[in-house]
Amino acid sequence: MHKIESLIADGEKNGKLLLDGRGVKVPGYPDGNWVGPTIIDHCTADMQCYKEEVFGPVMNIVRCKTLSEAIEFCNNNPWGNGSSIMTKNGHSARKYQHEIEAGQVGINLPIPVPLPMFSFTGNKGSMWGTANFYGKGAVTFNTQWKTITARWKEESAAAQEMTTKFPTMK
Image 1 (tube, rainbow, N blue to C red):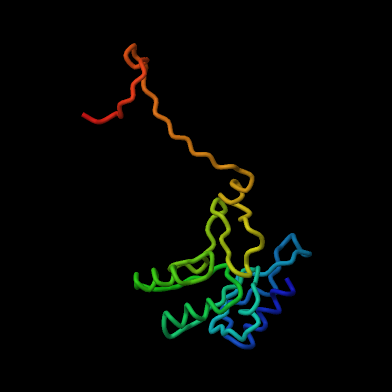
Image 2 (image 1 turned 30 degrees about the vertical axis):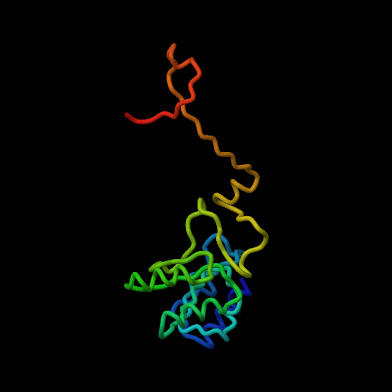
């Protein structure tokens, strides 16, 4: 909580704090470590709240003049957890999703994190190891894949005789 609040303070000092989630108190849980939703606008690459991964309810908004500048800006970050783009242009959305190095990409969604049944797909410094830890990745971690192709027909007396011709549609 203290780490996240220090990153929010950096955003307040160097950017524009649109929503402040510090100092949240939840009735009945006085000893909880609560941080509420926070939005930091006009984030830049030199801000601590952008340089570090914030594992809390904090959204950093970066404003870029061009799509290429936005992609380059994001790809220069050592982390690769998630990134989103807000656009009405399908070409821009497609270019962004293919060129961005983040593992979780949002198109017109503020938070690109899918539901738990999907695998975590963070990239770069945001991923440890070689396997995802939930969703399909968690299931396949200890699974050996096998492909079986079968064709079953009801047997008749004629079908029990061996044949070498290839079945065709007539």
